[in-house]
Length: 92
Image (cartoon, rainbow, N blue to C red; front, side):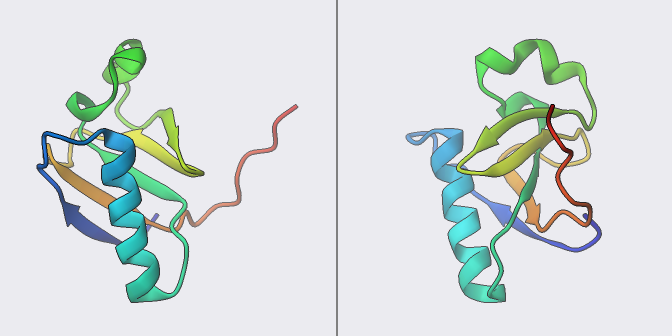
């Protein structure tokens, strides 16, 4: 993703899924496209992804069709969301 939108959401009462949905809804309304990729700080990933938190840019989570990847460059409670520049990898 070369271009995206930075979204901030520090609402501790909602899950990561809801936060990604909020960011995606705003992105869709503002840019007229559905986002497909979102980068978050590794500390924001659910506990089920704990083993993958050490990955800098690995695919670790999917929320409502949006691929959520960890990236240490993104600050906690921030979401770098946009459209992936590459087609999704084919699954066997």
